[in-house]
Picture (cartoon, rainbow, N blue to C red):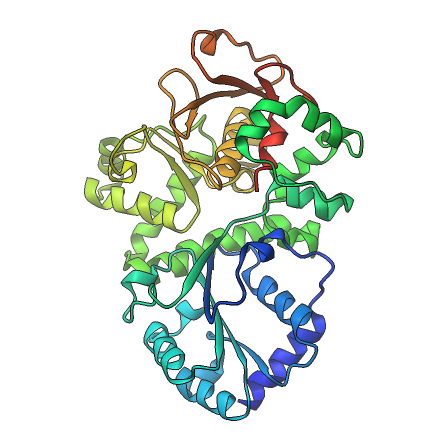
Length: 397
């Protein structure tokens, strides 16, 4: 246990609290069992350490441990919690729980046996709490942590705090809202950098290493996380990597499962499952037609990479700007609304609003006869009537 305490104290000392994500305010920290899921690199570990540093002046009653530490090769989690609790421990923060074989069952026992102990744990976006060995869904409050919004990125880059804007308010008052913002900053001066490297908060550590870290995130998810969770054969991981490269250069990618199956030699059912795994791992986004049932059950009309940073990481100079724009819109809006294929345009949001996304010279012809339709343009600071700047859809969360 001493080695974990030492490592925690080292991390505690190095943790900065200058740049804290707004997501910290989304969590009700009063709950006794809190789970935070999210893709690699979105900042789950940093968020927990920042919460501890802001709320606990002493580490005596707190212990942070990553469950991939060598300590757990010879020691079990329950025994650690028991020793910590007996010494007066109040908060046990457990990182990377998916790296520990029996994590859900032991956390359940810890929760039940030590009623005064608060537990926070993090896990991969692939983590399915209700399918774990011990169903924690009735005990734990689970939060899904996304990557940075453009609003959060602006806070880190400029120091200005802009309020989160609800979608109906954005559609109704976008011109005045944009004027208020551009009176303080020039958002387009930051937007292209956000698209290239600003979705993951690790860019704050060293911008020169962002491309390398993005590549590492993608490879670890494909080579380690997906095979671990879904029992995918290592030989078939090559197909997933090829799919990602194809998607990154598409405008966007329209899947043909039959063609993919014939070219790869993998069954259609397996191809469909692999697409689902990539989505669960937050490497891609699936755009489905609007349905009263469960849209995820059917074939997606289009597939995007999860965020624009991945496009630039995989496609580089071959990145299609139209694909980048649509990916940004989809990625940011899906955090607060349902996004589907539009029968007349690019996106249908909440089964009500139609959006056509393009550059500053994009015309309204395609949506001129569609009610509740909006033209979303890149490279403009302010809009007018039903024309809205693309960057403003990064202010929704």
